[in-house]
Length: 232
Image (tube, one colour):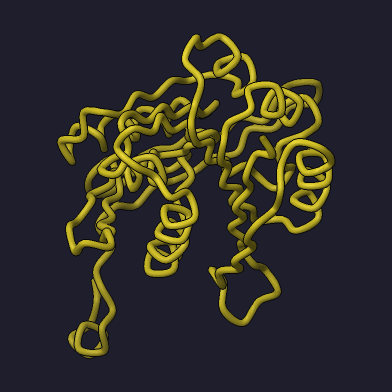
């Protein structure tokens, strides 16, 4: 229970409280079990688009969502601007998480396809599309490379926001094969970003822009948003 003084100082009451148990057994994959102790099952966040309209997001505990919401708006708006998306464009949103970047892009694009390995994140993404009445977006659960390589349609723009391990050699090879005219790479790890850009830009792409976004003030961590253009 918050005291009156705490409420006056801007502290807010917890809307949801979860207990997370980590189960680690030798020779087995580590498991995480969540128990809802108080409040609503999903966490709720609201983000503002560049035109002032709002997007509402539901987030389950094991689904990734940027912890700094205000800076995340800047991050995703930067990705949207660098992508230069139009109503004729098909957008692939790889490592889409709860659908934030794809949903930010949907009002500008013809169609958006997002994929992520985390089933909780995709459950959130689909619910978020319904909540915001966005119908030109589709989400799939699965390995990124296997899922996108099985699709017949080819993207005009690819947006990637991988974990710290980056894209890796095989996914970069696939991206080079499909020859999307534009690519936006959002990265939280400069080291793997540099490795992947070296492979992508060796022959096929030109790196036009790198825009850092400070998601974690007073730390050395940084997010980078890169625009790549295919060399026709």
